Length: 148
Image 1 (cartoon, helix red, strand yellow):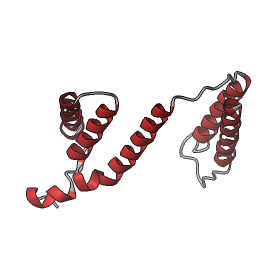
Image 2 (cartoon, one colour; image 1 turned 120 degrees about the vertical axis):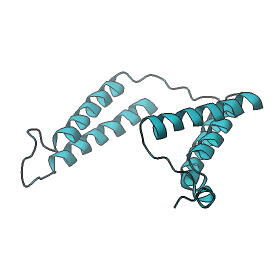
Image 3 (spheres, helix red, strand yellow; image 1 turned 90 degrees about the vertical axis):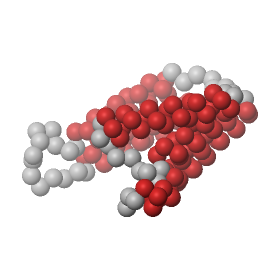
């Protein structure tokens, strides 16, 4: 039953995308497809997949309460990550996030700490150094580093 309800929700969302895309008006054509194409294509694909989900709905079993609690904790951690990203900076906020998520997935303290250091530093190197995408240092550290 839940699968069908979610499929109906996705169907209405897809139809809304199609309707919203059809309402886009551009005073001049700069692209042969125009801005209507992508939302209408996404809405069409979503509607087709939603119909398939409605037709092929199966009985849903919900996960154990411990899994649901872990999921809620991870969502709270992600919200906290987003809220502290600019203040703590990329390295520290990402390290803290990875540490706690590692602990949720049963890593010991050393494994979680090494994962936090490894993931945050590797991603920092990839984005900040190799791809030249600036990541925030953190407002609490910017005065120490002389950055504005």
